[in-house]
Image 1 (cartoon, rainbow, N blue to C red):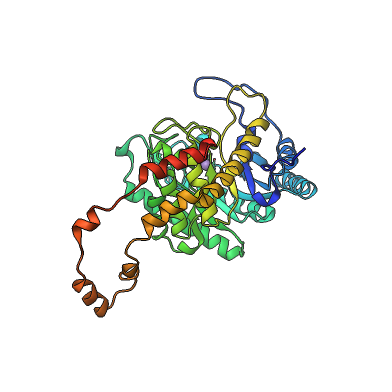
Image 2 (image 1 turned 135 degrees about the vertical axis):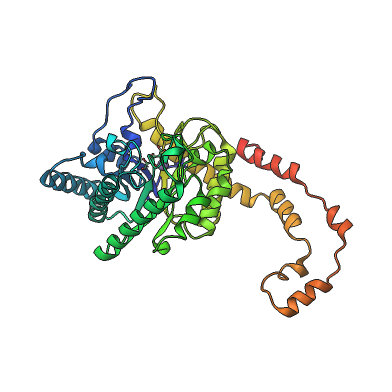
Length: 388
Ligand code: GCO
Ligand code: MN
C-alpha cells in the first residue's frame, strides 16, 4: 500500500483551539448536541493525529474564579500531559467575552473598574501563557463594540483599548516574557458592531501603540468573509507588514452570521489562494484552525482530520499551480512586459524624475495589451478540480 501523501506530520505545524474541540453544538436557537471533551481527551486526540499543538483561553484550562492552588494544579497537570504527548501550547488568549461582567465590553467598557478587571485577567493569563511557553498571545475583542452608538464615543473607546494594550505590553517587558500580541479583527457578532473590524484597521491601530514592534495580527477567514472582503488580500496585508503572527483558518458563507465552518468547506478557491499565500511567502507561524464541527457531529475527530487534510491537499495544489507549464508561461507573459522600466520607480532621485518625465509612453499599445485571464483562471479551476 502506498503511504498517504497527505499524512499529517509535526512539521506541518497544525494547531487547534481547545474551544473548537470542546464546542458542544449549542447555538442561539438550540441546546448542546454532544458531550464536552475534557482537556485531556482533546490533547490526546490531537496528539494521536500528529497535530503540533493547541491554542487556549485561560478559562478553557483554568475555571473562572478558581483558587491559586487549583490553578497551579491544572497547569501542572496540563504541562505534564504536554510533555508526555509531545504537544505544544502555541497560543494563549484571555476570555473577555463569556462572563456577563463583560456584557458592554472589557477594555472598552464604560466602567473603569471593569476595564481594570479585564487587564488584571489578562495579566493572570499572560503568566499562564509564559508557564506553558506559548509565544503568541491573541486579543479577540468579542465584546469590544456597541449596539447603541449613543452610549460611547469611538475615539474614547479607542483610547481605553490603547491604554489597556500599552499597559499589558509593559507588563510583558517588565516580566521579560517571550510573548508577542496578535489582535484578531472581526466586523460584528456578538456585538452589533465590533471595534477594529479588519486587518487594515488593526494595522493602523497598532501604529498608535507605545510598542508596535510587539504587536501583530491574527486574521480569521470567516471574519474576513463576514465583512465581504477578499481573504487572500486581507491576510496578505498583514504578511506584507511583517505582522502575521498567527492565522485562524476556517470557512464561512459571505456576509452572514458567524458560521465557523471547516477550512475549505465553503469556497475552495479562497482556501487555495490563502494556502498559496502562506506557502509562497513561507509564513513561519503555526497553521491554526478556529472552527466548529457541524452540530450534527457526535465528536470532533472527523472535523479535526478534514481541516488538516484540506490544508495539505491545497498545499499540493499550490505546488501543482507553481509547476504548471501553461500557468507559468501565461504569468511570464503577463509580468514580463517592459523589462527596461521595471526599476524606474524603485528609488526617487532628481535624475530618475527627469528620466521619467522624458520617457515616451505608447498609450495605445499599452492599452491594447492582451491579458489572458479567462484562460489563467480556468487553469486554476482545472488544477482544483484535478483535471489539469
Ligand atoms: C470568534 C472568534 C473566537 C476567537 C477565540 C479567541 O468566535 O469569532 O474567532 O473564536 O478567535 O475565541 O479568543
Ligand atoms: Mn478566531
